[in-house]
Every structure is written in structure tokens, then in C-alpha cells.
Length: 482
Image (cartoon, rainbow, N blue to C red; front, side, top):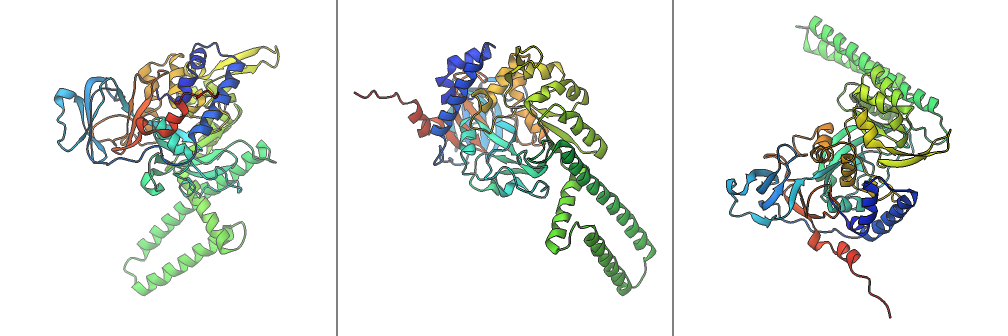
């Protein structure tokens, strides 16, 4: 879908991988190429200045709205940041004041959505292993290369979460990938709580799980105590109806004093800061157990999957599994549980059978589709990743080899992530009333050789390939030295 310089430079390698004939040497070459291109494209300055958010009209192109059938020779109008009209060009009135963009021969799709990433932050992990009250919004840096690369690749929204080195890492957020200030970019301030079942350095899995159970149990007790307090207060209010105001005030003061004393006793140590921190921790976990937010549970190994599902069942929270490579072994369990799962970035890899010594190829989209697990993709946040794992278009295209239709594959990187993140009322498809997040491509989605020509976020042109100086420098012919 959204081809980049790396894709064009390595079309032959990509075709080889897509045909299922890749080998380990190919993967090493891809990894080196990805590092080189990341170094060239990363760095200073925006790739394009955001254009005016006035009316924009795309005319003559092919629109794939995701919700509904594709429209050829279409017109799409964006006014005041939202899609105002969409249909055949002869049925849509173009506003006089609109900036008209000729999309003849181009394809328009919704902006892609990264359903889970740890990129875009100054620091991915905290030193303290238990920080449910922290929010990534305080660490997101719009000036990092991640956001520039996202726009270049047609990604207009991303769910950013803490890393996996903390037990309870804090609250994730969904943001648009264009903007100067985080508050202006934010779609969902608390998209879920990140929990990692991978033990931190120096801790075993038993200790990791024991600590997690302890924190969840304390949160459940807090809910029970709050409910008892609420009922008790309601009974007292009913009994004290008609009582004098000063007497009621005195009662309230006594109750407040009791609550403060109880909270101090429940704190693990003395001190005002510690007490406040404990209250914040409980509040964040209480929201989780009340199903006000989901838990994005990082499962590094297959053994972590049944543990995550058991915890969710025991404590009653909504789990979304963020899978590591080894978790394909638990695909059938995930399918039976109907639990949403986000596949690891490396969708195809080789591993050696410990008994036979034979090298075996693992194709994750095929394995999870066979298990009845809907596919959701994430890209790699490491510079050493192979080429394909860096791009959502590649993840979706690869899945078509395992049985997904093109329409289903495109939905897996647009509408389906929007539904999971509960933002599908705003983004994920091209529909009247939704945000004006549009990507104009040079050709068909999911095809090598297709470029992102324009990326539009909230009705603003935030990326224009014709103004991408970094891309031009990368593609410049190498001058031979005499």
C-alpha cells in the first residue's frame, strides 16, 4: 500500500518474500537495508508544512471507503476538518472556495491506524515496575522521527502504550500523528492500561504474577469497600432526613475523618506522597476492573496467554493480548476465547525444531486465521527490524497470502483497529461526518511500487511527496567520482 524508498530499492527482495521463498540471508539483508534507510529518513525538520484546513475536494480518483464498495471517478469533499461529501463526481457539489486536488489515476483510502506501538515517546519504560497512574501523554514527543515516518507511510492515528519492562506500565493514549501539541493531537486520553507478563530483570514469572495478583486484589477490595461505604452513606442519609443542618455537617466531618484514617492505615508506608500515590494506583486499577478501560496485556511467551485469560476471568477485566512470536502456539486457545489479539511485527519467521533440528517456517497470519482469530497488526519499533515488519501495508498484504481478501486486509489496518480502540465513530473509514483523515496513493493498496502521494489529517495536508526533500535525496542517482 504505502510504499517507501526502501520498498522501491528492494522490490525484488519483497517479491521474493511474498512468494514464500525467502531465506535467512534475505532477512539479514532486509534488516541492514531498514537500518540504512531509517538513518537517511530520520532526523531534522517536518517533511511538509501543514496546509490550510479550509475545504479540500479530491476529484476523479478511485475511493476505497472501507465501509461500502469502492467508487470510481469519485469526488470527496472535506470541510472544517470533516468529510462533507462523498460519491460519484457528477453527484457531488464542489464548494467554490475548496482547494481542488486532481486525483485522476490515484486511489484514496482512510488513514491507516497503528493499533499498538511504543514509539513516539521520550522514554518507553519507567524504572518503577508498578505505575498504573502514569500516562504516556506526559512522555509523547511530537518532534520524534516516528511521527514524520508515520505520515510518510499514511498512518494518521496511533495507539501509543508504555513498554514491556514494567509490570503495570501506565495508561496508553490514541493520538493523531500530525500536530505540534499533544493535547491537540489526542483522540483518547486513556485507551487502556498496559500490563506485561514478561518478568523484569531479576524477577521470575512466579514473582511477577504474584505481584500482579496482589495489585488486582487490592483494587477489587477497594471496589467492595467503596460499595459498602456508598450503601452505608445512603442509609445514614435516609435516617437523618429532616435533621438539623449543623448536625448533618458534624456527621459528614466525622465520616470524612474516618475515611482519611482508613486510607492512611491501608497505605504501605507513611507519608503524604506515598498515600496519594497508592490512591492513584488503586483508582487506575479500579477503572480497569470496572471495565471502564481495557488491559493491553503483553504476552511474551505462549505460556503467558492462558495466564492472561485466567486473570481476566478471575478479576473481570477486558483483555487485549499483545503477542510475542512464540504465542502462535496458543492460537487455538485465543480463538476459542474470542479475545482480541495483536500479532507480533514479524509475521513470517524460521525456527529450529529442538527434536529434529529441522528449520521450520512459521506463517502467523495463516496460523491465526485457521484458529479463527481476527487479524490485527502492529509494526516494529526497533531499528533492527526487517523491512516488512516496519510497514502496516506489508503486514496486510502478507495476510492476503493466507486467505484474507484485499478488502479484509485493508480493514485490518483501518476500520478494525478503530473499532478495537472505540474510535470508529471518528476514523477508520471514509464516511460523511467522520474526520478528514485521507491518504492519496499512486496506485492500488497493498501493492509494491505504490507511493503515498498525500496524507491529510483533520482536513490538513500534512505530507506531500512532491515536497519530501529527504525522499528526493534518497532517490537521487549516485554520482560517480572520477
